[in-house]
Image 1 (tube, rainbow, N blue to C red):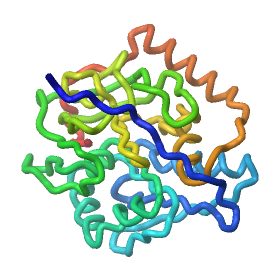
Image 2 (image 1 turned 180 degrees about the vertical axis):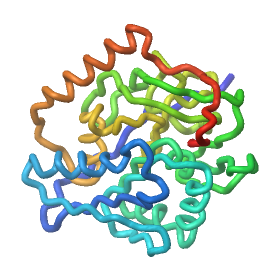
Image 3 (image 1 turned 30 degrees about the vertical axis):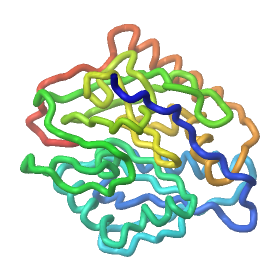
Image 4 (image 1 turned 30 degrees about the horizontal axis):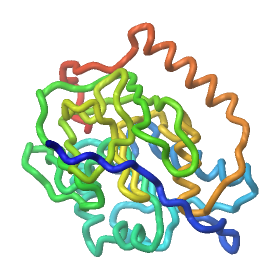
Length: 273
């Protein structure tokens, strides 16, 4: 019998950090900046600002040292060669691992998600070492691409607050298989997700969250954004999310009309993760 997956839970910080600004790092936007994923950091900063909590956006560019002193790190999607370069640079000194050990949170989307695993495939199809922050392996799938809307049901309540249905846009190839101790972020209702045949989408491992959802995912799923923030600043007061709720309803309606993702042919114009 397969080992049961444990309930995902983002650890909540004991108390709100107020003595200094919360530092949100956008990691290698030139390499991992596909599909507007840099907007995730902006959403996180705004949701702090709306609660009168100071924040600072920190862009970490390729070739520059990655600070291990930030509170949240955001990695986005990217093409094969930039992804491999980002992984190689982030492996030097393991700054993300040190930051997570010190209490930081990480949000990684698509190629960034793959980098956080134990291994992923390079542009030539050979395995490359990942950062090992998530027990996951990305390998060759059916050779076709998942393109379109993806909808998933959260696998369990995360922290003190339950999550509604998660929505996003996926555009990736390969398959990500989670290790036995890693919990998916959600179970796919419509779309492909991790593509491993178990309907899993994304992963949660401590304060590390990986997903294939673009959107940006924080704009489309603000409660998830708040849970990530709460893992580093403590409980947050609720705020009005009428616009996000309207976007959710519109996207769910689109999927109901046949807008979900499917495995589609590889695009000739590029090979994005």
